Image (cartoon, rainbow, N blue to C red):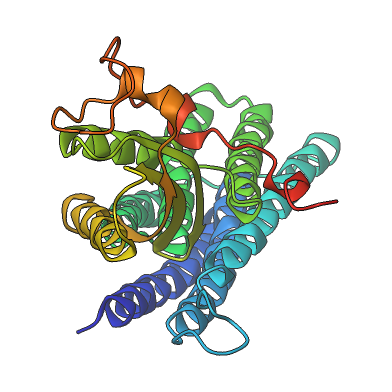
Length: 331
């Protein structure tokens, strides 16, 4: 089974269970007439809707790259996660609205053991589904699965609080506790949606993944060759599960084009083998300059103009430094 097929299979399983849990929560609501349980059921509607959207996005992202999409279709997962985040935000707002209505127009709430058991069981299943979704999402670098998993787990926390709150309501007979729970859970769901939306927007705007950049730098330093004079102008974007990275590599000026090509292939192979993420690296070679001799660690260079003073250290600032090349070729 391919990586894409695994992700689609996982999402189908999650969607099936989410639909079953949705039915169970509405049964619990009709048994108890609790706005807290209603909010949980409404959140499950979002779960099912978001699950359908995620499944569609995973189907589209699994398509191979083509003439119109040379980097593939992976960005659709970010769009899917953004839509899911908006749905979560809307659900949080509706939940708060329902709680406010119950404050203005109170209704009788029935304490029903079966209803509470259904909600508690649904919460536990949601947590396990969320854990599974996040685990597979991280392993296969799927933003859609990770976002969906976090959404399911946030639903679990609200379910736990809901059950405890209804028990407290039964013991104290304080009617506003039910609406108070709605405000709390609605707020939690609202902020969960805002957090997911912020992450997806950052990825859609190609914000650099600092964790991957740090791992990339560590891999370069660990495998550094003496003829890797300098690495700079590194840029990274993520499309689906693949990171596309471009950089400039400075090598000795007297190397032939063939030697330069071999060195570029060498660093690409090292990154491909040692990085846990799927990295598509493209390297451009630059010739070294005289002023770089004092930082060059290549011991057997016959063209050195001055001795080694201080070895050049590869840092985040160095490898990501980029001059404005757009001005270089303007007259």
